Image (cartoon, rainbow over all chains, first blue to last red):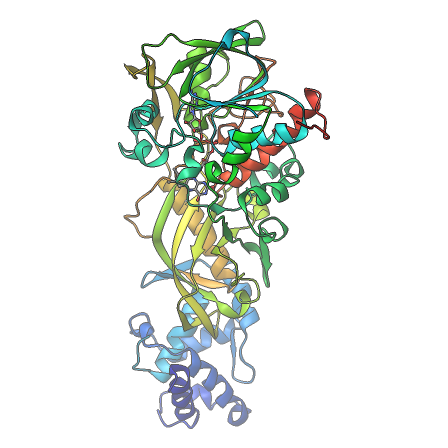
Length: 121
Length: 457
Ligand SMILES: Cc1cc2nc3c(=O)[nH]c(=O)nc-3n(C[C@H](O)[C@H](O)[C@H](O)COP(=O)(O)OP(=O)(O)OC[C@H]3O[C@@H](n4cnc5c(N)ncnc54)[C@H](O)[C@@H]3O)c2cc1C
């Protein structure tokens, strides 16, 4: 099975609320319809390499921050255009030898915390 | 039929319209171009023989100070018919326009560009080498795709030897090293030739109305220095090389955005470059980042999981001319009793490499085209055998050695062919541009010296 499909599977579990760690997924009025889509998107992005950068971070705080700066919405999911425009001005962060923009890394940390994949790349 | 000889018989009575010193790609291209365009009598003079000879090869030795190690010349110079094309790798790409936009070159880019099609023909390059030298990538103006096309590689001695040797108006004189140009006033009057092997033999003197140096990036300034020509010009100053850094970083590249751009069928090395305008706006020099197509993986890029190439990156970069990098006299003599060139060269490149990589990394990441790694902190610089900039082209004689037509500022009948005239070297291998500029020089000389496109033998 392709790794991407594995991650999609994990996303579906979160969407059903079985992990119990993502109350924000359900606290929106349109959450029942919209949450699976954001959850799926996060599941696609979740990667075990972000376990170190996500350590000690709170998914709620990350979600609030990303929602405030327009990167995330429970209705519309990830706003990649916004992420791209933020990336133009944000400082680059080095993590495990690669460059990330700040919001991008925050998003991947969030995806990791929500889905906690165990597979590395 | 012209003559191929190792003996210059009756040289005092021998008169040539044009003498070309050096039979590498530049010398051979110019001889053929003039022979095809004009009825002029041409001498093509070569220090070496048809094959490599270790005694003659030793004449190319130099005293090296700095970053070009002992092995540099043994590895990068060939004193024989065909010059270094007998061992070159064949990587070809047009020179970046950046240096022209920034005013480093005194001629418009169009002056060079118009000769690339004919140069591609000489090097057996596909038309894409000049019709599609770089390609825009969707979603970014900062980075372009720039392939380095591969010449077979053309060995100029093998491909053009027969035509040179059988041409009725070209005399190929092998095994003679030009040791001095004798000038008076603004004219070169004679060329002094020394037998490259029999050093006891008396030198011979040859006459030519017009003289062209095509002795390579060290040989060209050296002959001017040994002849005392252009003493007030910056001869030998501002030597440039191309730092090569192999597998110094890794990157992920969004394959969706690249797959329509990459020329997969071509015999080429794939590379990305900062766009010329971006370099000018950020006061950066050109450089290219090679990538390969071997590994496709899945990678999150700006919030989407994408199918991405994962590839090591090798860099080939431009350096700025630095007056401390130069060719001059050493205290050692060669077998002909002439001082070996002393070459001072330091890359002084580490800081620039970090800055340029940072700019590239920024552009790559912020447009979502890819994710770069950091540069390996202990990266090594390698040289490319590309010697440029030692007889720079320019309008101001205080800053340059040759004018926009490659004529030495102080001397009316003396020209220079080869990468020594590059005032800025870009990040592309030089030979394609050497050939283009040499064809331009051939056209100029044909016009100036009474060329006749219908010249017959
Ligand atoms: C290993 C290697 C790999 C390379 N790979 C590439 C590549 O992939 N792509 C690329 O673009 N370029 C490459 N190059 C560079 C390329 O070979 C040169 O750019 C090209 O050969 C320069 O041509 P030229 O005619 O100006 O000089 P040269 O080829 O150096 O020829 C100069 C000639 O002048 C003769 N000469 C010198 N002094 C005298 C004198 N006083 N009297 C008489 N004759 C003299 C020499 O014997 C020689 O034959 C490579 C070079 C090397 C060494």
